[in-house]
Image 1 (cartoon, rainbow, N blue to C red):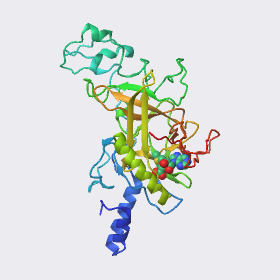
Image 2: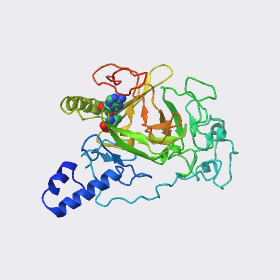
Image 3: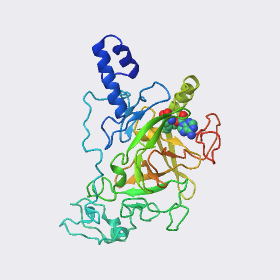
Image 4: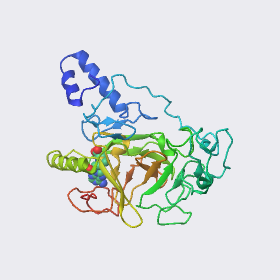
Length: 360
Ligand SMILES: C[S@@+](CC[C@H](N)C(=O)[O-])C[C@H]1O[C@@H](n2cnc3c(N)ncnc32)[C@H](O)[C@@H]1O
């Protein structure tokens, strides 16, 4: 029964009282935590709009390669226990500097300046750092342009790409962050691994009568705090195109169907495309699949995070401003409105009337 789709569970529940009780308790378990214990906090679902108990998809805190055969919506028989209490914080950085600056002998090569962190991402038993490496610009913990990304509270403190001032100006441009990763000798406690601990704030999924499911903050989230990554299936362009055609067909017949296919493109200063990251959270994903679009940019800042030594970047979100408990979490899906078919209900002053859509 734990693997069954909501509809099959309901049919089975109608056959006898014992199965009805089991189906009801399974439904309650699912609605109390859509993340199935895979995140630091349970993610409850609330719906006073209709009788759908919870959305159907497979929860994964991290992106996976295209799942074939598809995962079942409720993957495991035994529900994994919450490993940490719900009020636990991510592992706090153990020291002021990243441990991967330590040499083989355990001696610290760099001083406590975060801007000196560059040379550093090396295995503990890797060869000593060369003069050339010492002179390399900083990498981990920095934005692509070299600015330091995080302040002492692990909050994103800077700087839109277009503004070089110290004041953080929210922007629709994606920031690009480099974090410590598999190529570094440091542990998960390193302060340059802010985006690597899964969901970092309490959220809940709520049904909205116009936009479908939506995501709400269940706690105050300070400006600059990491919120979550956008996890889903990583697709090739060809796979994405064929899925998009299928989703367009499904939308014609199923009013409730809300696909969550995101395409992020990165360009070189020359304008040439250098990265296309396609994440489909329609079937497999995390809480970010419930974030709706807002034409004014919303309260989440999307960023591309690269982990040192990992070939595939991630799409991650930080709070663009202070976010109050109960606020809906939103971001801008894009500026291009190529095909005006799906009405937007963001209700902001900047609303363009339709959801962004671009043929790629
Ligand atoms: C990433 S999902 C967001 C969660 C979705 N609302 C759901 O029910 O699963 C994207 C889909 O949500 C809907 N959506 C998101 N933002 C919207 C908005 N501002 N107005 C209307 N629909 C929106 C669209 O159907 C879109 O394809």
